[in-house]
Image (cartoon, rainbow, N blue to C red; front, top):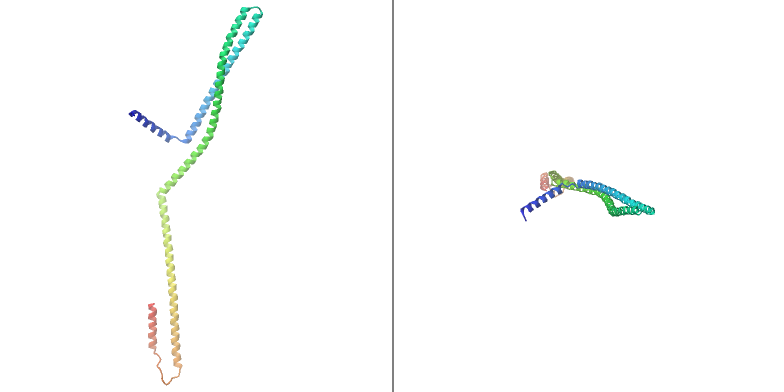
Length: 256
């Protein structure tokens, strides 16, 4: 492969790529409709010219046919008057006009066929343009929808990669972390409160028991003083012993 062929292929490839990128579907569709409308105008003009030509040819055919008929009648008239030479001249003119009419008839038949073909092409082109206009509106709607979807996808992609979205997600995680710490602190605070009430309840039991013991001790000393002295008098525990026992109980309570 020669260098010029390769260079030509590269140039054509780049040009095709540039053209493809520059093509806007909506603009191309509009331009295609405009081009078809121009083709339709040209085809209508061609049909009009063909019809005009056909009419002129038809007039020429009718004229020559009429002339041939006239010369035929003149030949009959000359022959009826006994002028054969004049009748022969009239028949010669008739022959010329008949031959011309025959030639024109061939052209006329061709023109009629051509006009019929042009008319069918015109009708087909009009139908195609009407169909193309309908498709154009549908394609433009699809192009608009595709552009909107592409724009939405790009926006979503930018949001997913943007620093703002990252910051938003970090703040969301931070709020969740703060909520978790708050719940943990509340749980710990509830446990402390339960422990405090448990201590108070335990303390009240000890105090109640201590008060009961005090009442027992106090009641026991009074009843013993009221009893009459017997022969073998026993000495009651002194106040110092009670105090010592009370101190011992207090130390036990403190050690709990």
